[in-house]
Length: 424
Image 1 (cartoon, rainbow, N blue to C red):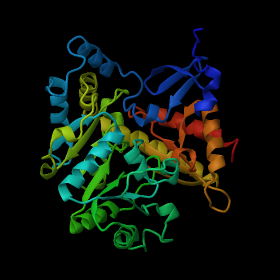
Image 2: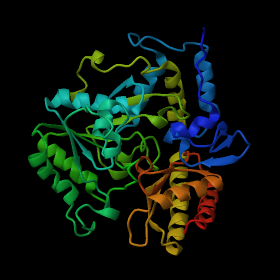
Image 3: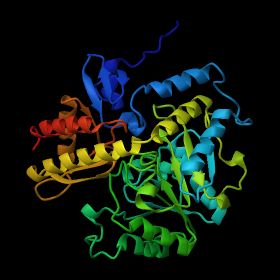
Image 4: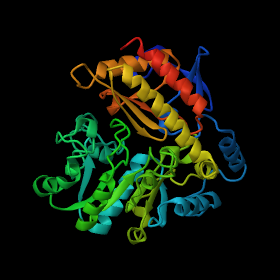
């Protein structure tokens, strides 16, 4: 007798840890669910809808490309991918002259950058800050800076060396930025000496920690980290998968902080509106390797390249980054005003339109349950957000599309205040 496989019904969503909202349409900074409710998408999909939902110019570029060439073997060049490479090389920090587009997501881009660093240095270990998120593949999950992402897997990629990050609000060394002497860089030497294999290839760091709680490093931290790596011939890799292409109000966080990494990875927002593409940008000295060592079927996808070209043109337009900075300043200021009257808000931090609101208990400890309650309240008030550290943190993450206007920012802040009343 033939049997019919039962497919999961919509009511089974909780079994798969999905939310109870079914989104059916998006436009700009807004999305609508199956019941017609409108939401302001303050996490840009999965932080990847840089230009919001269904940006008309990006969608038009993709449609036009479908009429010419949807896909090509990686053995061949295509006009869109060649142009993306040229554009990225032109706008990146000047030392990053080579672009590898053979990854299709942030996880594989970070893995590729690590491979390049290992091949170039002949060394093994990878230094990663506490709370960092490198990706979801087995190797990057093994290197992630949280136990939750590593614990379920019995066999993990070796060589990850986790060190305290520049989390000044909860400093590992119980210091303040004014007095610490940058211990979170200086003490890495102890970790290398006593906890590594003695063979360190690279440091991989998000200039602003994304999933780890929107942690902004203190002034001088990244410069000191670059000096530390240079002295030891360690490759410094900036994971700009969340911070890149305008998120901080500058083209890259490297520009905002005034630091040139030896390598940089990009993904998520590179195509503006959700199509997958990732890039590894590197110095010339690390680009001489066999391309077959890191290649994926859908890397350099032609449709994604068309979307990326439209996105790169838009974010370079006069006034675009100025709007990101202006809208971010409005939102950051309004959220800090809320902090003054609400002790449940322990810290508000961020740069551009990459912001975080950390909730605390009366004793100053992390308020994880309150963060989830606040997220639900925000959703009830039409705001989509996320809770940091894959739901185990206490920071509400905000990454609205970069087309957010100052007026939109005021509207978001108003709803943040309204939603706070129920959980304060």
